[in-house]
Image (cartoon, rainbow, N blue to C red):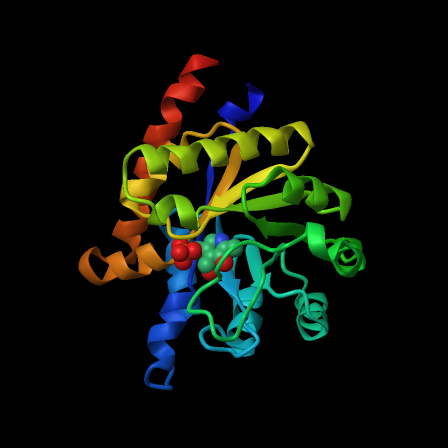
Length: 254
Ligand code: PXP
């Protein structure tokens, strides 16, 4: 129950600010400016995914985020030699290992940690030895949780995409239950548990109410909503919804 008291951190993903910038190839809008604004608006950390094809975040963005941010930077990346070199150069607070396919529009599905144990274990060790907190972006499956612990990752991030895409009702409840069970199992294994992908105002509440979660990472919805209300207001509203979902849990133990 002690975990329910913990502040649920909000990591704001700024990838899609870079998507808009790159549509014209210039400097505007700058994801680093958005990241600084997000931190000011209450983001506990900033997440950025440096993809192999550099379709949104660039190497220069990572360099500038690393030097200008005063909140932790979570670098999402594929487990490749190129990305390992970049992570070891910049030493972000955290690295989240994600699967990556060139053709996909976004990160489809979680990393198959169980199937890639031998490649991932030394990778995780090298990052950890450099003082970087490593998380594995996985589906809410027991075998992936156990494999994540076995490769030495201290953190897992549960993929919430399926839950968010499922229409509200019994089927979505089933997806929520999967996330709840996985978060509970992660805690039993001694893993810190995060969640993210596809979350918006309509879907965040039940996920934020899972007491074993320590952090949510949210990007696309916030950047889209910023068009209508501004980035700070969108982040502020998300923070309110997360805190409201969490309030009954913290009240129960105080
Ligand atoms: N967490 C991870 C590991 C991701 O890959 C992404 C998408 O880049 C997110 C969270 C955020 O997803 P969204 O942009 O749909 O909120």
